[in-house]
Image (cartoon, rainbow, N blue to C red; front, top):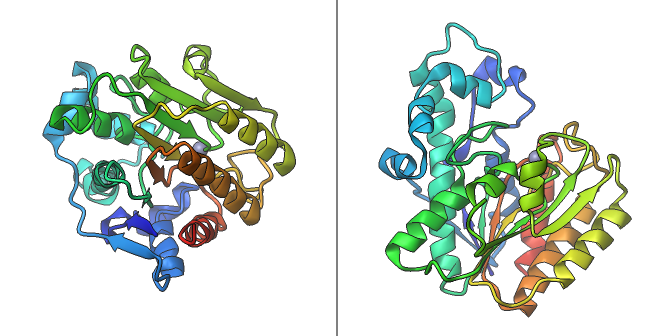
Length: 306
Ligand SMILES: [Zn+2]
């Protein structure tokens, strides 16, 4: 049984402006269509946007100003600054969906801590931090979730927390967000030749798996398996940044996995976490090809049988 967190509000539809961006903003709906008849999943909807108070509590002073300004937001979203696009438009079309994604990660983590396997179809904004927004990521959902779980007492500052980042890109935002918190351990599998290239954040990763461009699936999966085998059971919860931009069809990730390889990857992940009895929260993260939704759906359908 897997608990799925999905809300129609996740979907980003910019109409004719969709062509400006490689991201398929409607992929969440497509994933849902492929999994909703599965009797081994439970869907949790009605997810409201996380509040600005919570986001501001997380963000530093400069970020508190920048995250409500159109120009820096559009830069972080990697779209050209189009004069007729207003802040209000961005807010309703992009920011609200992302704030719902953040809230879904928090809700999923709360349920995971009670022993359930959870999957937020959105979230996984691993390039954002309290100091920065970039790479289509505005709010760091894992770090905001951590902040809220510490406040509510569901996590203690002494608890070890694991982030498994298997998106094709290095998770510089998570590394930055937890730079000075050694209770958070990061396992990161990434294409070492693409964005982001910052050494300081790469060095923060505890279990580092840098891979060459155009890595083949066998090497990807065997390297990942080896990294998983180094993990111990000392974690209260694991967040998995399960990007599907590792697919060969993806133009940004520079990797060669098939849909079956992605399913195999998620099986390795959940099997290992189950073995170590670490609660798992899967997050959607990157994935910009037409196969992205199908890969996520196939993985969920497979894992729901475990
Ligand atoms: Zn990515």
